Length: 127
View 1 (spheres, rainbow, N blue to C red):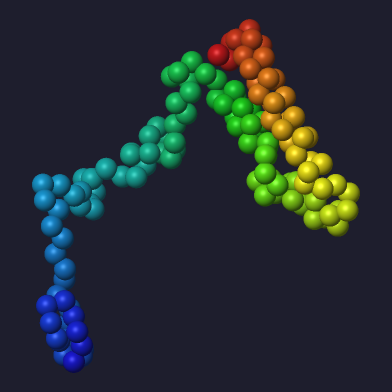
View 2: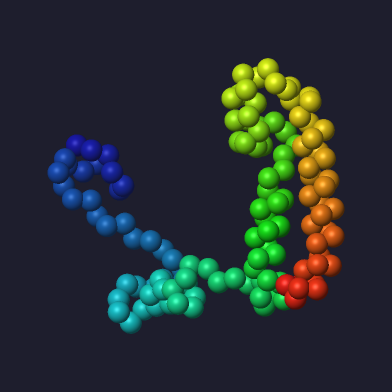
């Protein structure tokens, strides 16, 4: 005897199919008359569609900002490149305290350069 939903049942006896109360939600069923995943994904079956052109921003600008802004770190464990250099050098070349001002300087310089780049991007028609 096994304990199942609704009490004891004999070993080997099939379980009843559980019913799901969806309330007023109409769940779509599979079939040829239903929307395919490619139809839901957008144009040409892509899983995403860039939204930046609709906002007047070239996708290159978004990619460049992500590339520059995501390389900074303020804590030692935030950058795998920094950790590889630190541990690969045998932890003898520099300390975390020595690297911290450089990391903060990178963050400040990256922010200033990205803000100044807005003028160039507007001149090139990317914004």
